[in-house]
Amino acid sequence: MSDEDDLEDFEPDQDDFEKEEDEKETEEGEDYRKEGEEFPEEWLPTPLTEDMMKEGLSLLCKTGSGLAHAYVKLEVKERDLTDIYLLRSYIHLRYVDVSENHLTDLSPLNYLTHLLWLKADGNRLRSAQLNELPYLQIASFAYNQITDTEGISHPRLQTLNLKGNRIHMVTGLDRQKLISLHTVELRGNQLESTLGINLPKLKNLYLAQNMLKKVEGLEDLSNLTTLHLRDNQIDTLSGFSREMKSLQYLNLRGNMVANLGELAKLRDLPKLRALVLLDNPCTEETNYRQEALVQMPYLERLDKEFYEEEERAEADEIRQSLKEDKEKEQEPEPERDLEPEQSLI
Image 1 (tube, rainbow, N blue to C red):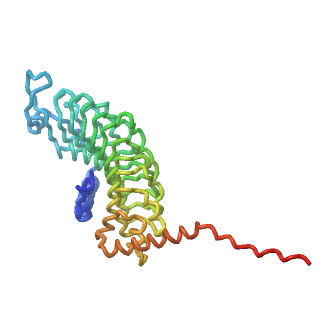
Image 2: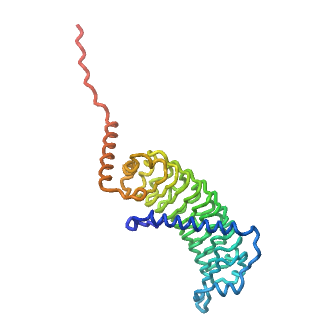
Image 3: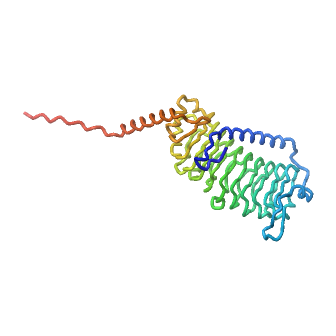
């Protein structure tokens, strides 16, 4: 699922790369679930210790004042940790990875005001809420038990990963604060709506494997280039608008779009170059590829195949014919000459 910032960066093998990523993430998610099944509900307390810190610290850098040095990177993965209280004292940390532990509380991270990068995947978190961290750019909370998106307000946050959680509805993402957020990953949740994701700088949005039935509330995302909606329950293509002028890649594989007429609702997307509709009922129609190109003349690839010049020429002819038929329907009927009235005798 490559980013497609502009047409020149468009990658022909995007679907193949996407397939590898999907398979990798599916396996990763299954691993997390299997691990979760093996452990009891209650963990033996395992706090972060100074010895663990010594083993996990790296990357010696100058502190903010420039007069001292401190380690700024910490990796303490797979330590069965239930408590990271000790981190309150390590205020110079910039990169922290506490993945694959048993954490339910990240509040000690509120003291790390220099934090740039956080990875807390595969824990038992029920919330991603933290105090506003002024420099945090990347935050990943994948495969936890998070149920909402409240309390995420970091002004420099660029990438937010919440895949594999239990989120039903996106709330609390303030467009006035999250002015740098360009990539949101929400695959594998329980989303029933796309409302609440109206972020001004958003470029990449991943919503596969949820419970969505339609697209709504995304009409004003003028910077969005990639929208991934695979494996939902979408049966209508309403919800797209001319304002989505940057959208280049749209993946709707494994949904429930049955009517080819729905494709007409995508014709106002001027930069749409790649569309994936595999495993939708409409793809079984004999004129499926042709109809898509008739409705979207700028489309370069449908599913895994690029359009050939012959297909483009045929689509142009059909489009021209439809235009002429429409013009004829709108032409007023010529007035008939009235017969002169017969002279009265």
